[in-house]
Length: 286
Image (cartoon, rainbow, N blue to C red; front, side, top):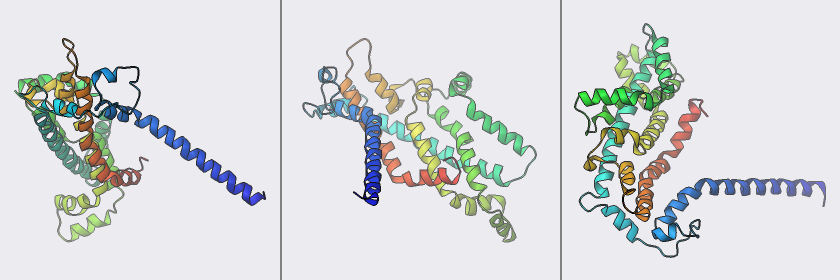
């Protein structure tokens, strides 16, 4: 075997080792999801049997999905999915739209104390929700907004700090000459934002939309804090309702509905995944 053949053989072995390691790590990361999907077709007894780690069910039980979707008969998962889409849709729309407008202000408009307010906005990224949830609950309770979607949706129309930061970095890379040209043509600041800047930050907008959709769809603490009526529950709260410490828990139905709850997030991600990479690379976060 000559040196060229040895080098080619060595490179192929390295490539094989790399792909084998990637497959193993990928399987480890995906195993919890695959395990949940597999358990959605099993009986509760099989889930907790000695063969519980197996990904292949003894028999595919679609009845778990029918039983889980019916829930308690009076309220089905149709209601919970509808509530989740209402909450997620309006909150995402408000968060992305207002964040882009605020980001335009920080990136393009000079005003007194701009750096100070931008720093204050940035510092709010460090504040966990658990710190502010009690004051928020008191305020919204006195406004009479508890047991409505308003406490979950209205604050999103004030902008989300992470999205504002993301879009500010994106807008700063757009040449200011475009703004100056628009001013010469008679455009106001709002027209510059709506007709020039907004279309140009499409990757950042879609990235923010995907993150916001995922965060709101997966949100558990917010709905738990402000919603007490079962007809207003989101999917995340409804899944928690399956676990009843007073009676036996229907784990098969929980896994079945948990599997269905993943579909909206996966579909959104698959459709717009290229914009996530483009948006994060452009803003220098990756």
